[in-house]
Amino acid sequence: MASKPTYNIPIGPIHPALKEPILFTFDIQGEVIKGVDFAPGKTHRGIEWMGMRRNPVQIAHLCDRICGICGVSHTLAFSRAIEQIAEIEVPERAHYVRSIIAEFERIQSHLLWAGVAAHELGFDTLFHLAWRVREEAMDVIEYLTGNRVNYGIVQVGGVRRDFTDDQFPRIYQALETYEGLVGKLVTLFLEDTTIKLRCMNCGVLSERDALELCTVGPTARASGLAIDVRADAPYAAYGDIDVKPILPDVYADAIKGDVYDRIVVRLFEVVDSVRIIRDLMDQMPTGPVLWETKYAKILATCKKAEGEAIGRVEAPRGECFHYVRMNRSETPEAWKVKASTYSNQMSWLKILMGEQIADIPIIVASIDPCMSCTDRVSVIRDGRQGVMTGDDLHHLSVEKTRRMQE
Image (cartoon, rainbow, N blue to C red):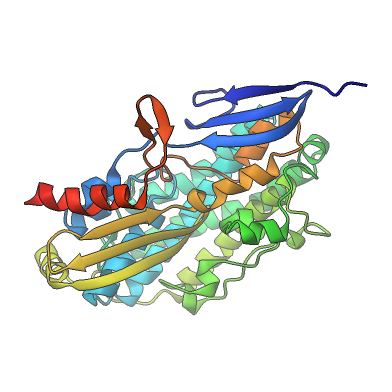
């Protein structure tokens, strides 16, 4: 009997199943995926290029805008790198403020993802519920920082504003709200028969593949890798509390590394973030929240700084990595950002193979991709997409930039 023919099907870059522009190309045999390729580079904004023409205090504003969901993670990673180079000592209370906001950001990010996942499964009632529950974290973030998105609270040397005593009851109220909703969320997402049938044994990423592909965050932990920057290399106030990587076996009997396990990890990370915020609130020290109240002093210190450093932060999607090099100048000599999705997107090539066409949306969404903070330039020469050589990159990133500055 002759085998079924194979068809090539493009999905994207603009497609109802994709929340951000990215092009997938699938080789399909019947309803089964036999080949996968993807092409990012549709939303490149040149933020690194802009940042290298601004001082570190201004770059902090840009970092907040790399991603509308995890802006604090990017700003914190960049600030940590600058603070290491310039030898700026962040006040202890500022570390706690940073960590509390980061955990509220993790809560709202995971609940946003949960809603998107429900939508991709066709469960729009659960989608609206998850986003309604998310509003509590968004309201608290706005109450504490003044903004729902692009919070603007993290600054080189600390944070822009402190928490006042009369704000604490509102924070505890939010924590109690989430503690009361845990059972309902777990039941709706993890006990629903349809979700189990759609997500169990679907989009499986083995522990070995997760390790070899250098995945990070919930994507890696769902496959059994116990990695978390907050625990492995504590920063901010995380060294003062107990932080352990959340693995699927907190709920499931065995770790499979499938879509279902990724749901488990994110839901129980919401639970853990509530516990972490409560611990941080209980231990919060007194004191200033900014290394130097005058930004002119901060800028002068950064201008004298020389050297290179990296800032690592456990963003909601995984490790966020900023590399910065200063050379006694007001602007960085180099600044490179590696967002979490950059590390996770290669897992698509594994988890989509052999699956059904109908499962493409939820499998793609299961790594919680964010293309706006991941994208790099797509190189088009003579109408064809190409690859840049090392010499090409050096010419554009160093030599051409130097000539422009001259």
